[in-house]
Image 1 (cartoon, rainbow, N blue to C red):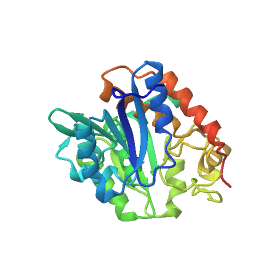
Image 2 (image 1 turned 90 degrees about the horizontal axis):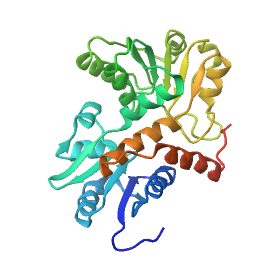
Image 3 (image 1 turned 180 degrees about the horizontal axis):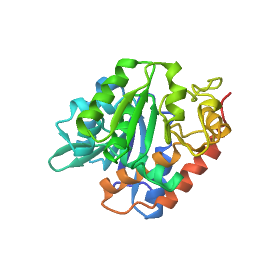
Length: 292
């Protein structure tokens, strides 16, 4: 594409940022719709985020995505938050408007769409076990509660974090039973009782990582969605598949949260097929393989 004075700039900010697939996805979307736009990635330290966002708005950027560890920083620092960001306590998409900077969260939407796409069903009525109660796990757990899950059980090495998220679910979605698996010894039983298992920890991102859950924890008829997206099959997917479960990685969640962000910025339907193809090509280009 030819970059000129009228090219609209979009960006993803993180710290670090080298892992992101978002530029490939969004630049493919702009190309598919023949928009004069460019999507870049910038490493921004948390303490600089609000100043950088203000400068980007003044410079006329079209929109911004945020990744770790900036989502909670934006939530705490922005004056304007839409309902999705307030509900999930984090911001992953920035919209620049005439009235200021607005924080959104498209992660929950992306998770629900990815789950439906991968497994052909919704989370309504499901018994869900979420391993990891940090930013991503918390968002998924809350979205499951909102979407009508029968129950959500939380597991994490930080028991207090689990208890906090469980309390949030009980307060916001009382029809969903929120429970805590108190330690790693309780996780296998919680997994076997679940219809859907969501792996939301960073375990599996590095070579040599051992799965937190063994094949014996799983059974036929279950679904596992691992939020890690840069390996076709993660260590937890391999364990779940060996135990009889149906599995998917987090590429679909990345795709659909990105498509929703694109639509917020452009007010135009996202070219999802082009974005998906770009993500799949990025996996091949980076030659990422299963660790271990």
